[in-house]
Image 1: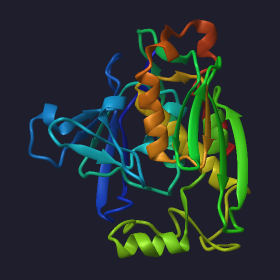
Image 2 (image 1 turned 60 degrees about the vertical axis):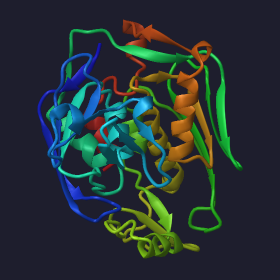
Image 3 (image 1 turned 90 degrees about the vertical axis):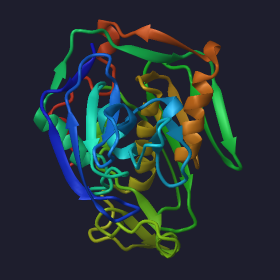
Length: 308
């Protein structure tokens, strides 16, 4: 069945790229509503302020996931919040915010997940539909690529390779059933190299970033206090990002995602490529047996405590 939150959750923080403060609230919503963002800072009618998450709403951006509508309203850096919603199995929500970016918080999905688990997740009296992958679909950009393959449940496999010894070559794969996202990925933070930070700030970006809300590396050194939360935190965070980017499909995906040096742009193109090939997928109604294998099925405090 479809779900929503049991009560409103609030988040206050700074936007990663502008560095400006932003307040965000996630509200319960009825069945069939989907995930909709509402920019309360804009002096526009509600229909023009709102952007519904969908492949059609995607706007290509190298450093984040961004969506927009026909009125020019945009919302950026939605990936960690979208990953948290998908990982907790929340299908309907109205998200209000007073700026163009979602707050970065600690650079992971864990603060969102913790608030959702505390608020409670409510089942709605409407069946859940999912997108089942029927045939492989792949997109490439240079030596980076991403692919979706048929599978009974959602799984994510990722491979990264960085010259910095603090990251190096990492591969990991998980089946995202039940509370796996919450336990294994939700606390993994965004990461970058110190030279990338210097470049972005010189170009007016990442003004809200710091060593507390990102893992910053330089060569073999992790500059962020406390070091890594997990030995392979970088590749796990790339999997977290992929979870959020796949959620832009507007419904859970039943399939295996494989990413090689992929990022937001490539995964967004993959979602669009899938939806542009009717023979590569089908819409299915999730039955009781399948429901037990969905990403957010049975998420509880114990899953969250596994990341503490």
